[in-house]
Image (cartoon, rainbow over all chains, first blue to last red; front, side):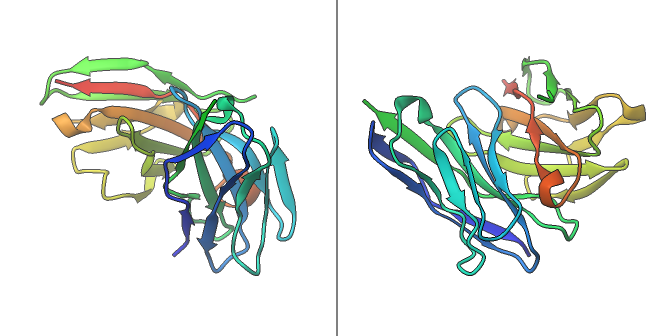
Length: 112
Length: 116
Protein backbone atom coordinates (compact mmCIF):
# COMPACT_ATOMS: atom_id res chain seq x y z
CA UNK A 1 0.00 0.00 0.00
CA UNK A 2 0.87 3.65 -0.15
CA UNK A 3 3.24 5.02 2.49
CA UNK A 4 5.19 8.14 3.39
CA UNK A 5 8.42 8.27 5.38
CA UNK A 6 9.93 11.50 6.61
CA UNK A 7 12.80 12.76 8.75
CA UNK A 8 12.40 11.88 12.37
CA UNK A 9 12.45 14.83 14.68
CA UNK A 10 12.79 16.85 16.61
CA UNK A 11 15.06 19.03 14.53
CA UNK A 12 16.62 22.06 16.21
CA UNK A 13 18.19 24.79 14.09
CA UNK A 14 19.56 28.24 14.69
CA UNK A 15 17.86 31.18 12.98
CA UNK A 16 19.31 31.86 9.57
CA UNK A 17 20.46 28.31 8.89
CA UNK A 18 19.09 26.09 6.15
CA UNK A 19 16.48 23.36 6.54
CA UNK A 20 15.95 20.05 4.78
CA UNK A 21 13.23 17.66 5.86
CA UNK A 22 13.40 14.43 3.91
CA UNK A 23 10.24 12.82 2.59
CA UNK A 24 10.12 9.59 0.63
CA UNK A 25 7.02 7.84 -0.60
CA UNK A 26 5.83 4.54 -2.01
CA UNK A 27 2.91 4.18 -4.34
CA UNK A 28 1.97 2.42 -7.52
CA UNK A 29 0.02 5.43 -8.71
CA UNK A 30 0.83 8.96 -9.84
CA UNK A 31 0.27 10.93 -6.70
CA UNK A 32 -0.19 14.53 -5.77
CA UNK A 33 2.26 15.38 -3.00
CA UNK A 34 1.59 17.76 -0.13
CA UNK A 35 3.38 19.49 2.68
CA UNK A 36 1.29 20.57 5.65
CA UNK A 37 2.41 22.69 8.61
CA UNK A 38 1.00 22.59 12.13
CA UNK A 39 1.78 25.54 14.36
CA UNK A 40 1.48 25.11 18.14
CA UNK A 41 -2.12 25.06 19.30
CA UNK A 42 -3.57 24.83 15.78
CA UNK A 43 -4.69 22.22 13.30
CA UNK A 44 -2.49 21.42 10.29
CA UNK A 45 -2.81 23.63 7.24
CA UNK A 46 -1.61 23.18 3.71
CA UNK A 47 1.80 24.67 2.98
CA UNK A 48 1.70 23.72 -0.71
CA UNK A 49 0.93 20.85 -3.05
CA UNK A 50 2.46 19.60 -6.28
CA UNK A 51 0.35 17.44 -8.61
CA UNK A 52 2.91 16.73 -11.29
CA UNK A 53 6.26 15.01 -11.36
CA UNK A 54 9.36 17.16 -11.74
CA UNK A 55 7.53 20.29 -10.69
CA UNK A 56 8.30 22.41 -7.68
CA UNK A 57 5.97 23.77 -5.05
CA UNK A 58 6.73 26.70 -2.81
CA UNK A 59 5.23 28.95 -0.17
CA UNK A 60 6.58 31.23 2.57
CA UNK A 61 10.15 30.53 1.48
CA UNK A 62 9.71 26.76 1.66
CA UNK A 63 10.01 24.65 -1.44
CA UNK A 64 10.00 21.02 -2.53
CA UNK A 65 10.49 19.29 -5.85
CA UNK A 66 8.42 16.26 -6.82
CA UNK A 67 11.15 13.81 -7.83
CA UNK A 68 9.39 10.85 -9.40
CA UNK A 69 12.58 8.92 -10.17
CA UNK A 70 13.80 9.14 -6.57
CA UNK A 71 10.25 9.01 -5.13
CA UNK A 72 11.15 11.96 -2.92
CA UNK A 73 9.63 15.31 -2.00
CA UNK A 74 12.13 16.90 0.38
CA UNK A 75 11.16 20.18 2.04
CA UNK A 76 13.79 22.91 2.00
CA UNK A 77 14.21 26.46 3.19
CA UNK A 78 17.34 28.50 2.78
CA UNK A 79 17.08 30.51 5.99
CA UNK A 80 14.72 29.54 8.79
CA UNK A 81 13.16 31.93 11.27
CA UNK A 82 11.92 31.40 14.79
CA UNK A 83 8.34 31.67 13.47
CA UNK A 84 8.94 28.53 11.38
CA UNK A 85 8.92 26.43 14.54
CA UNK A 86 6.16 23.91 13.89
CA UNK A 87 5.47 20.31 12.91
CA UNK A 88 5.74 19.57 9.20
CA UNK A 89 3.82 16.69 7.60
CA UNK A 90 4.49 15.24 4.18
CA UNK A 91 1.44 13.62 2.58
CA UNK A 92 0.52 11.67 -0.52
CA UNK A 93 -2.79 11.66 -2.31
CA UNK A 94 -3.00 9.19 -5.14
CA UNK A 95 -5.76 8.69 -7.66
CA UNK A 96 -6.63 5.13 -6.79
CA UNK A 97 -9.32 6.03 -4.31
CA UNK A 98 -7.43 5.44 -1.09
CA UNK A 99 -7.28 8.18 1.47
CA UNK A 100 -4.42 10.59 1.75
CA UNK A 101 -1.40 9.17 3.59
CA UNK A 102 0.41 11.40 6.05
CA UNK A 103 3.95 10.96 7.29
CA UNK A 104 4.61 10.87 11.00
CA UNK A 105 5.55 14.55 11.06
CA UNK A 106 8.82 16.34 11.80
CA UNK A 107 8.95 18.80 14.66
CA UNK A 108 11.15 21.78 13.89
CA UNK A 109 12.35 24.14 16.59
CA UNK A 110 14.24 27.25 15.54
CA UNK A 111 16.23 28.99 18.24
CA UNK A 112 17.54 32.57 18.19
CA UNK B 1 -10.43 30.17 2.80
CA UNK B 2 -12.74 27.29 3.67
CA UNK B 3 -13.15 26.67 7.39
CA UNK B 4 -13.78 23.57 9.43
CA UNK B 5 -15.32 24.22 12.84
CA UNK B 6 -15.11 21.99 15.88
CA UNK B 7 -17.33 22.09 18.93
CA UNK B 8 -16.47 22.19 21.79
CA UNK B 9 -12.91 23.44 21.92
CA UNK B 10 -12.34 21.70 25.24
CA UNK B 11 -14.24 18.90 26.96
CA UNK B 12 -13.55 17.48 30.39
CA UNK B 13 -15.31 14.27 31.41
CA UNK B 14 -15.00 11.44 33.87
CA UNK B 15 -13.68 8.08 32.76
CA UNK B 16 -16.46 5.77 31.63
CA UNK B 17 -18.75 8.54 30.44
CA UNK B 18 -19.78 9.04 26.85
CA UNK B 19 -18.54 11.99 24.84
CA UNK B 20 -19.47 13.32 21.40
CA UNK B 21 -17.12 15.57 19.48
CA UNK B 22 -18.70 17.67 16.76
CA UNK B 23 -17.28 18.83 13.47
CA UNK B 24 -18.80 21.21 10.93
CA UNK B 25 -16.89 20.42 7.71
CA UNK B 26 -16.47 22.59 4.62
CA UNK B 27 -19.88 22.77 3.00
CA UNK B 28 -19.24 21.06 -0.35
CA UNK B 29 -16.77 18.49 0.90
CA UNK B 30 -17.57 14.81 0.66
CA UNK B 31 -14.86 13.09 2.71
CA UNK B 32 -14.41 13.46 6.42
CA UNK B 33 -11.65 12.45 8.79
CA UNK B 34 -10.72 12.26 12.44
CA UNK B 35 -7.19 12.37 13.79
CA UNK B 36 -5.84 12.00 17.33
CA UNK B 37 -2.90 13.91 18.74
CA UNK B 38 -1.61 13.09 22.21
CA UNK B 39 0.13 16.03 23.90
CA UNK B 40 3.66 16.40 22.59
CA UNK B 41 3.26 13.77 19.90
CA UNK B 42 2.49 13.80 16.21
CA UNK B 43 -0.99 13.56 14.76
CA UNK B 44 -2.30 10.06 13.92
CA UNK B 45 -5.10 8.99 11.59
CA UNK B 46 -8.20 7.46 13.16
CA UNK B 47 -10.87 7.10 10.49
CA UNK B 48 -12.28 8.44 7.26
CA UNK B 49 -15.92 8.57 6.26
CA UNK B 50 -17.78 8.95 2.99
CA UNK B 51 -21.38 8.61 1.90
CA UNK B 52 -22.51 7.50 5.32
CA UNK B 53 -19.88 4.82 5.75
CA UNK B 54 -16.50 4.29 7.34
CA UNK B 55 -14.05 3.76 4.52
CA UNK B 56 -10.90 3.05 6.43
CA UNK B 57 -9.85 3.05 10.07
CA UNK B 58 -6.62 2.62 11.97
CA UNK B 59 -5.89 0.39 14.93
CA UNK B 60 -6.39 3.45 17.15
CA UNK B 61 -10.08 3.46 16.21
CA UNK B 62 -11.21 1.21 19.03
CA UNK B 63 -14.58 -0.53 19.29
CA UNK B 64 -15.65 2.19 21.71
CA UNK B 65 -15.40 4.76 18.89
CA UNK B 66 -18.09 5.49 16.34
CA UNK B 67 -18.64 8.15 13.68
CA UNK B 68 -21.68 9.42 11.85
CA UNK B 69 -23.04 12.37 9.96
CA UNK B 70 -26.83 12.23 10.23
CA UNK B 71 -28.67 14.14 7.50
CA UNK B 72 -25.69 16.26 6.50
CA UNK B 73 -25.37 17.87 9.89
CA UNK B 74 -22.33 17.66 12.11
CA UNK B 75 -19.79 14.93 11.53
CA UNK B 76 -19.41 13.39 14.96
CA UNK B 77 -16.96 11.20 16.83
CA UNK B 78 -18.52 9.38 19.76
CA UNK B 79 -16.51 7.58 22.42
CA UNK B 80 -18.46 5.28 24.73
CA UNK B 81 -17.16 4.54 27.28
CA UNK B 82 -14.16 6.82 27.56
CA UNK B 83 -10.81 5.72 28.99
CA UNK B 84 -7.90 7.70 30.40
CA UNK B 85 -5.83 7.04 27.27
CA UNK B 86 -8.44 8.82 25.18
CA UNK B 87 -7.19 12.15 26.51
CA UNK B 88 -5.84 13.99 23.48
CA UNK B 89 -6.62 16.67 20.94
CA UNK B 90 -8.93 15.39 18.21
CA UNK B 91 -8.76 17.05 14.82
CA UNK B 92 -11.48 16.85 12.25
CA UNK B 93 -10.71 17.36 8.57
CA UNK B 94 -12.63 17.32 5.31
CA UNK B 95 -11.73 17.12 1.64
CA UNK B 96 -13.50 17.46 -1.67
CA UNK B 97 -12.07 14.25 -3.04
CA UNK B 98 -9.85 11.38 -2.18
CA UNK B 99 -7.13 11.52 -4.79
CA UNK B 100 -4.96 14.03 -6.54
CA UNK B 101 -5.48 17.73 -6.00
CA UNK B 102 -8.90 17.19 -4.40
CA UNK B 103 -7.26 15.22 -1.60
CA UNK B 104 -6.21 18.45 0.12
CA UNK B 105 -7.57 18.26 3.63
CA UNK B 106 -8.85 21.24 5.59
CA UNK B 107 -8.46 20.88 9.32
CA UNK B 108 -10.41 22.25 12.24
CA UNK B 109 -8.74 23.81 15.29
CA UNK B 110 -9.18 20.65 17.34
CA UNK B 111 -11.10 19.59 20.43
CA UNK B 112 -9.03 18.98 23.53
CA UNK B 113 -10.53 16.03 25.41
CA UNK B 114 -9.50 15.47 29.00
CA UNK B 115 -10.64 12.24 30.64
CA UNK B 116 -10.30 12.23 34.43
